[in-house]
Length: 330
Ligand SMILES: Cc1cc2nc3c(=O)[nH]c(=O)nc-3n(C[C@H](O)[C@H](O)[C@H](O)COP(=O)(O)OP(=O)(O)OC[C@H]3O[C@@H](n4cnc5c(N)ncnc54)[C@H](O)[C@@H]3O)c2cc1C
Image (tube, rainbow, N blue to C red):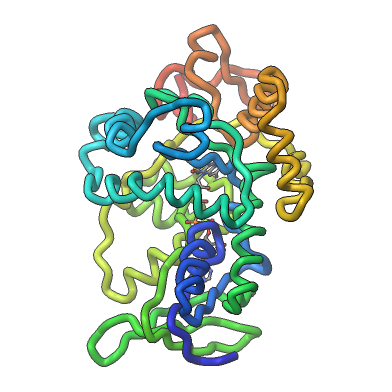
C-alpha cells in the first residue's frame, strides 16, 4: 500500500464514502480505512430517508420550499433544553446544501421516492432512498472505484499522527496484523460514526443510569471521538444524544429491503416502480420499516398500551420519560 495520499478518510459509512468520493471527484488521491470487514456502518442498516428543502422531487409535485423555511422547522424537533445547544451557523450551512446533495446522489444513480410528510416540517421533505440505505453504500463504493480511490477494510485507525506544526498529518492503522503509518498531504477526515454502543463514554458524558442501553449498531464505539480527543481536540455536546427511546425489537431475519439489489438497472427500475406504487402499498412498506428498530409513538400509550416484562408483569409507567426507556419501576 502506498504510504502517502492527499486525503485519508477514517470510516466507510455514508459520510466517509461521500467525503471520499467528493475528494476523489476533485482529483485527490484518496484512501478510506474501514475497521469492519465491509463498508456500511450504521448507514448500511438505516432507513435512509433524506430530508431536504427546495429539491427537484418537491418541485415536480408543485411544492415550493427553501432552506430558510427548513431551518425554522428543524428548530421545532428537539425540546428547548437541547435546541439551545444548536450551532445555527452549521445547521444553516448543512440545510442549504441538502437539495444540491440530493441532486449529486441522484446523478450517481441513487433513486428516491417522495417527498413524504415528516411533521413538524411544514411541507413534505422526506425523500426515501430505494430500496434502502445500503444503496448509498453500494453506489458510493462503485463511484470511488471508478475514480481510483482506495478502500481498505479490516483496517482500524488507532491513532492520529501530528506533523511538526501540530497539525494532523496522517494516521496509524492496524492492517493485516501490522501497524502502518500513512500520511495525508491535505487532511484526515474523521467519519467513524457515533458512540451509541460505548457504555463507558455514555456513562461519562450522559450519566451512569444510561450506560446499559445498547446501540443498534454494536460497532458504534466512538473511535473517532477518542482519536480526536487523544490528538488534543476539545469535546463539546457529548451529553446531547438522541433518546433514550424505546425500540421495537427487530426481527433476527434480514429485512426484506436488504435483499433487494441496490445498484444497476434493477434498482433504477425499482425507483421508477416505487414512485408509481399505490399509496396503501407504500404505507404498508413504510409501516414495516417503522417497526424495525424504530420507536413506538406516545399515542400508542395514550391509547392504553402497556409494557410488560418476560414474566408478563407491567414494570414501568409508560408515560414517564426516560423512566420507561431505562426501566425505572413505576
Ligand atoms: C435504525 C436506524 C435508522 C436510521 N434512519 C435514518 C434515516 O432514515 N435518515 C437519516 O438521516 N438518518 C437515519 N439514521 C441515522 C443515520 O443512519 C446515521 O446518522 C448515519 O448513518 C451516520 O453515518 P456515518 O457515516 O457518520 O457513520 P456510520 O455509517 O456508522 O459509519 C462509520 C464507519 O466508521 C467505521 N469505523 C469506526 N471506527 C473506525 C476506526 N477506528 N477505523 C476505521 N473505521 C472505523 C465503522 O465501522 C463504520 O463503518 C438511522 C439510524 C439508525 C440506527
